[in-house]
Image 1 (cartoon, rainbow, N blue to C red):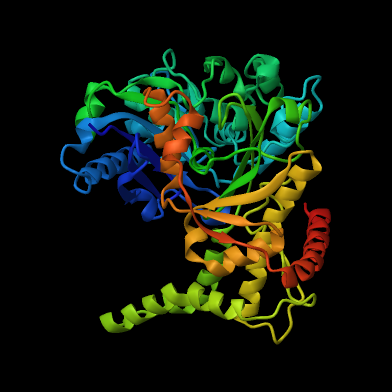
Image 2 (image 1 turned 90 degrees about the vertical axis):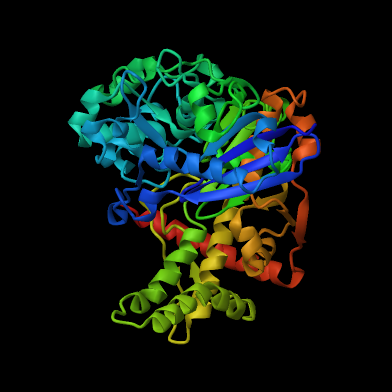
Length: 550
């Protein structure tokens, strides 16, 4: 009889469910549901870099996506599920009360953005991140040594401190904070109460300063030295973190009924989407797995012996067991990738969106034009020659994640002329995202972490041959594209299979369940040398903007 695991992937806009056969790796069924409140733009203020998501969105969409899955799966498939696991965006934390309930799920705070999950791309905590970096740098023990040396406004403690400073009512009601991937896992297991709450290795190691080198989290007095408002937050967290192949708990009777699943099935520890995606991509030393979406997240692994005592500068952490047990997981990424293209499309489409009083036919035509905009730009840009005189752009439209996190920097362009039309402008933006990715691989290599090839997953890898070929040319290395449309959810399903005992370890599960490659891009030798020259211009422009940053 077939046995299945369920992978749940919470992205920025939607949640995806994937049902996988643990014996064959066949993807049996998949479903996707958008977050209803997020789709309306509620609780967000982009002009202030504020992006919040309501926990009820996560709950409602989970029920819809799983129950909708059963209409697509074979009859009786739900009864054959033996385990489930989650991946989410991160760092996306929320304040919880002393019962473990996110504050936005209580009547007092149900419409307060500060009581909601602070989405990964919320950059309101730039000041707080800088203070945490300064405190760690000047401390006897640098608690950021294994996190690239710079704390980001995208991460847990900066966000918590910023909310506390902005909202005394939320501060007074908060017991501690928890990441989305850990909370949703605990919700399924009935272990959200702080006395029962267990945390995964991924989020704690990459965003919360957890490391075995200092026995878990930094001490409370380190955080109070930054601001007394952080007093006690860390002491209320369980430092016994676990990798994602371990059992977090069993599915409760309530959630089994709500999701149509067997009660008591295994729930694995949660992780961030990019880490689970790397598992589905057969991540291994020398291979960088790149999740390409609105932003990117880059994951590779290495052995403890190979890395030695190196603390890689300017990345998003190196954590034992955060991706594959017994290996060091390393994370980097770009704050904007597809978001940069979407920004340009919205810029061009602004006049279209202002039209009112249109007939249904006219409105449909405008929507069709907007939908085709990036396709047409890509086709035109792909036909352009690549020269050393081309427009050069930075990809920092949403700040810089890595290398060397800095959310205060901004995008810039150089070389614009009267003859710079929309395709040439778009070409520069695509090249900027490729250059930003190259800066990450070069940082890894400079620090002794080999990167020999790249595996990409995510929507852009399947949607744009132009973007992928440009990346291969700029990076001067082969790029493999995974076949699975839901690689992050697949990685979660693989980890659930190990946790449920269907496979003895992650490597064994990957041999059966990991996604094959569907396409490969090779660098064009004629363009590699030109892009080497343009990359130097990108670096020079970045140095200028960095030097002028406030």
